[in-house]
Amino acid sequence: MMQWQQRSTLGLAVLSLLREAEQHGEGAMHPYKMQRLIKERGKDEVVNVGQRASLYRTIERLCKAGLIEVRESRREAGRPERTLYALTDEGRSIWREWMLDALANPARKYPEFPAAISFIPLLEAGEVCEQLEKREVHLAAELARLEALVTEGGSWGRLFVLEMEYLRATTAAELEWVRSVAGDLRSAAITWNHDAQHDDDAQHDDDARQDEEER
Image (cartoon, rainbow, N blue to C red; front, side, top):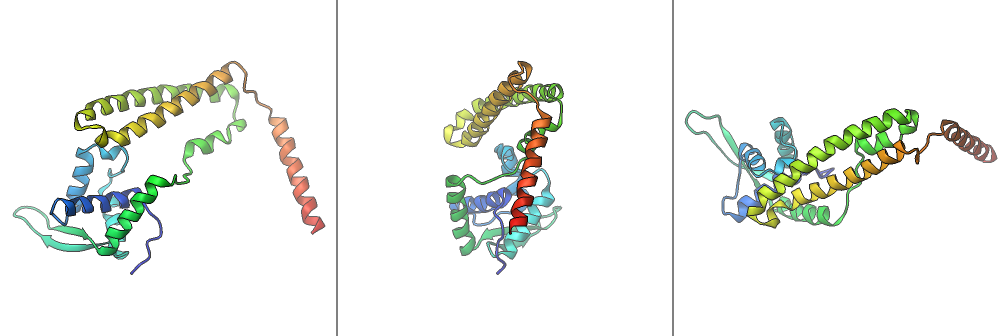
């Protein structure tokens, strides 16, 4: 059995859908239905199934890892052959392990925005402020969209829109932070000092060189 190297959002979604199929007495599901259910339920807000090829690659890796298996292949009149997949005993155990771990332990991510923020001293204050103001507009529009989705999905009960509530909360928090930083840039509460950063880096280089020589 191949060792599964890294948990993925799509992999967790596939295992979860197959676990759901078991609970409903179906036992197996084909990839097309997985993709359709994720989109119909609005879960594509948190699970990227825009490219079916990514779904098939994930399924292939799960099969190689022994977490799912082919249950049967069927061909209906006028339709391409469809392969149905089901959880293995190992997959059922790993699914539960992944779910509990994902709920309890924040994963360390390396998204692009914080990385860009870490290098903004290389730009000018005015252009940074301008771009953050643009981000404000995008975030405000996204927050309004999420608000509508939460309201729309509320008829199903809060349990079924918790992920949308989470996205709404994180988007609102980011919007508040971006607004505060843009405001401090406009008021010059945050100022640029390229020379100070360069001098600090140079000092660190000198200290590192001295440490190396002493060794």
